[in-house]
Image 1 (cartoon, rainbow, N blue to C red):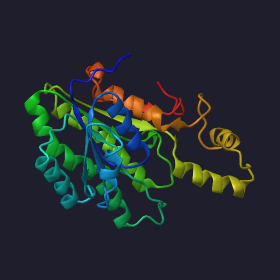
Image 2 (cartoon, rainbow, N blue to C red; image 1 turned 180 degrees about the vertical axis):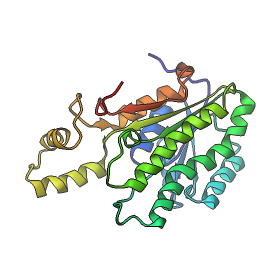
Image 3 (tube, rainbow, N blue to C red; image 1 turned 90 degrees about the horizontal axis):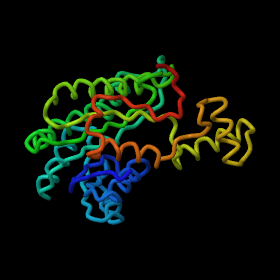
Image 4 (cartoon, helix red, strand yellow; image 1 turned 30 degrees about the vertical axis):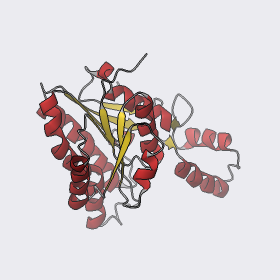
Length: 263
C-alpha cells in the first residue's frame, strides 16, 4: 500500500535519536517535510535533520513551559506550519511505591503529559484553520497493563492515553485525528545493552537471539516471539499520519506482538 501524504509537514519530538529518529526517517522517505526536535540545545537536532531531505530542526526542553515556548517560537521564525504532530518524546525513571517522591511523580507528568498538552495548545489552532491534521502520541502497553514498578511512569502514560481520547472529542469535526500508539518492548541499542548486562548476571549467555528468547519467555511473552523493532513502530505511526488513516481516530493502538490479551 502506498501511503498518501499531500505535501505535509511533520514535527517529531525527540527525533534526534532512537525510535524518534526512525519515525522521522520513515516519514521523510514518504515525502513528508520533517521538523526534527531535540530536547537538548546542543545541535543534535540540526545534525539529525541533515541526514533527511527537505527537513528542519528545532530544540528546547519541552518538559518545561519555557522550552516548549522556545520550540513554538522557532517554528514561527522559520515560518513552519505543522500538519502532523508526533509526540514521540517521553521518558521513564526508576522508582517504587515506597521510594517515588512527589518530585518524581511531577517530573513524569511534566515529561509525558504536559510536554504534549503544551504543544497541542500551540499547534492545533493552525491545524483547525486548514481543516486537516494528525496527532499521534507515543504511549506504552503499560497504560493497558501497568506494573508495580515505576508507578509514577505508568500513571503519566495512562494520563497521556486519557488526554488523547479527550482531545479527540474536542477536535470533532475539525479534520484532525488523534491516536495513541502503545508499544511493548522495543529493541533499541539502550535496551539491548541493558539486557546484555542482565543476561551476564543471569547466565543467559552472550548470543543476542538467545537472550531475546529468554526475554520473551520470562519477561515479555507474546505470540510473535520477539521484540518490536523501531521500524515496526515507525511504520504504524506513519500510517496513522497519512491520508489513508482518515477514519482511525481516538484509538490507543497496541503494538506488542499480542502480549496483552483481551477483546
